[in-house]
Image 1 (cartoon, one colour):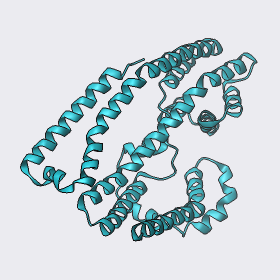
Image 2 (cartoon, rainbow, N blue to C red; image 1 turned 180 degrees about the vertical axis):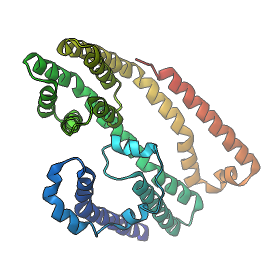
Image 3 (cartoon, rainbow, N blue to C red; image 1 turned 90 degrees about the vertical axis):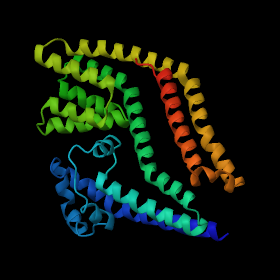
Length: 315
């Protein structure tokens, strides 16, 4: 009962803290990042100045961490459309892994469980970010074909490329609409079209969109009927997506089998740990146990690599 009450109180405090953080700071931080591009931010200048002095503790701590050039985590956060920096994320991961690890240790007095919980908390943001990136990429690719048709039809009707992009951004929704609105805004601010498309590909690393960008850049240099080019690319993308969906269906069983085989040792270890802790702790307290664990992890890794190689089909 004490464990349940302590856990509920702890997570309640976390939820309230994050809610306060989001309400008070997230929108203003987002505005600060756009102030160099969008003149409309002058409307909220007064409000921004009133909250500029109210920075969070995490934001202040993130300033103590030196910035790294070409930080992959920054690119991932941009691709995931998350309004925090890599330094802030590092502070979040560090503090919460320590806090939850300390809470588990106080309640369970078990170093192994504490280490597992801390590692899980430390790595959970990466899993969330990767899933969010994949979800946005899938959403973008699903609407890409229809968006290209809209742009092609608008070009046929006599609109310029900028107007056609604006029509596609207005008539679609989700990730595709958001990205093309950003693209249109950058073009309106005078950013070269090559740079604007490069920025889009950083935010949405879509192979199908790379085909579109390459075709537009080639047409820009040598000329041609852009509407017809986009129609042909749209047809190609549609066939590629059809083949990809077929491959996903054919490899779904193999992926599930590989996941189950990979998780069986960990599941059995957890069951044995809870029912006979002394028995399994020999793996972590003896030299023979360390050797068995090392061989097991190497074998597990090799098996996962083989399964991934078998079920991964390049389209």
